[in-house]
Image (tube, rainbow over all chains, first blue to last red; front, top):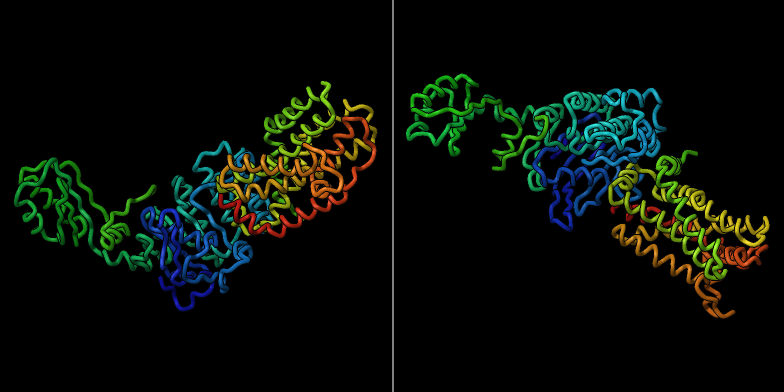
Length: 323
Length: 238
């Protein structure tokens, strides 16, 4: 993913790659660049290399090949100087659980060396993620979603220059997702680069300046979400599920309905694309019923990044929670 | 100077009250029958030394391995916090917590010893503190070598018993032999000698070679801090 020419500020990785010795899975070679205030989304199915790429950028893994520069310097040992400027949220929550949420916030803030923030700032971070009422309870009593929110509150409190978030939407309720979007916006607004990996395809990618679609460790598409979506401009997806396989000739009938640009039969399901939004739907249903077929379900949806991914790779990208 | 790791270690030890009380009560229960019975001083002192040293070594290695396996230690390392400082804080805080938990057992040994005297009491407690510091440092190296908690428990036992053997706990080497030379620098020797003298009722002076043993412990501390980055990386990767 070639970044803009001026993108030398925060992340500049070239032909970066890594293979896990046990599984052989990994990522790369991948190019990625992020400048100050930029939000980048890494999207792809499980095993596509998103988490590995984030771990490489967090200096958690040493690249097998390629080069990585962070904050304008090659990312080489000693790494603690780089790590102090990075906030990394792995896809799992690790907390000293006998400590309360507030104590965890202070503990990790002290480790990061940002002084723990003012008590008012910590309260604000807890409030932002809806944890104020439980702030003084031991984390051992927190639900998974609460631990995820605490992890995010800890990271955003740190005011680091590079935020790396692995599946930040996992476990979040709609309010948590709102808080996450606001926090990403605030962090980017003060100049931090934010790179997140997500299976959540309907909301988070839309706040990204750019997204990188990964498949089997390689980049398959990159660009601004609006640019990528433009490839699907006007191609609404219509899915009609029938009780049994469509009668002969129905496909031809439906294909001739004005606005229908493509039609695919998948068992008892008809998958169509329309250049006229939902307008052809009444005519389509009328012809299906005329042919004596029984309709079980009708779905009409605007295209998303998952459709682009499917077109590029032939692999259906499952939409994660919240999508 | 802030010491968030040491502070957290303290807070966690005090908050896990049941574990803290168990760690205090079990050594007491193990020491009680030996102190009240008529065990020969050489055997009693050996058992006490083994108990105290294993307590320190395992108490350091196993939590490190657990936190390495569950990812907490990795998260701490990735904040950019200095790994040598992390290990130093854990060692010092862990040694103090161990000392507090073993204090009742040590106090019982001293209380039931035949007329130990204030000097012997202070020297024994000082030797216990030094031995626990050494044991906690050994625990860090064990955690770096082991691949699992079970392996860590095994390695901690083997290394501790070897060092106890080298410290003269299980035998008396011939004067002037290599064994005697090694023993004079062994980190757990002062503890064993003080326990032996207190139990036998012959204590009163610091054991010979205590300064060398202290220097060895400080050397081990320096080596651990010097290798802290590599040790921290190794342990935190689980």
